Image (cartoon, rainbow, N blue to C red):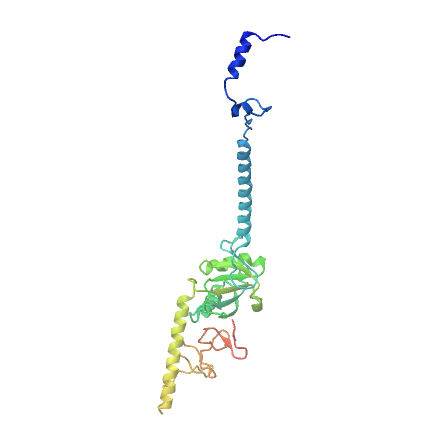
Length: 278
């Protein structure tokens, strides 16, 4: 048996000279040294590319949506029917003197349709088949309507003569059985306004003369004699020089032979109740 050396005896004696504490009772563990978490590589460039691609896709979708909305999101001129507007005609404007036309006055201006009727006829811009009041007098936009695409050039030509109003395709006026329908609105500034005012003043003068004659007859006074047309035997209106229809008291249109309605300024067939053209 080997005996301990003097150094071992001294070290053992020195170790036994201290009391046991909590550090002498540490549990054994297999972990040695510090354990650090390995840093993972950051792929920032991948997120950047993904963001750019997403932005490009969303931008493309947005452009397509705006284009589709712009093509079909136009407000129609009226609440019903099919109509599409075109401020700038896609064809060359070409006036057609043979085009049948209806004129509708959608304004409170009296005799506007009748005045334009006479202008279109005298200037040979077309053939008037009807002229009168529209269903309402609060129309805002003046326009020339046509239903047949072949009449686009004729509609554009007439629109230019009327001060550059818009043209539209529409099937809403098929009842008039014409190629072109002129709807006069509050924005109308074309020909016929001055003529309508003159016709309205003339109608007022005629009404005043008629009232004066009626008052004279009621008072027992003899009404002033009026000139008579020797060819027809009818009285002549001194203001217009036209024969007076004895049934209605209206002036007679020499071209058609029908009395002229003071409200519209257009020749009217009493049997039909609508305007006629010569």
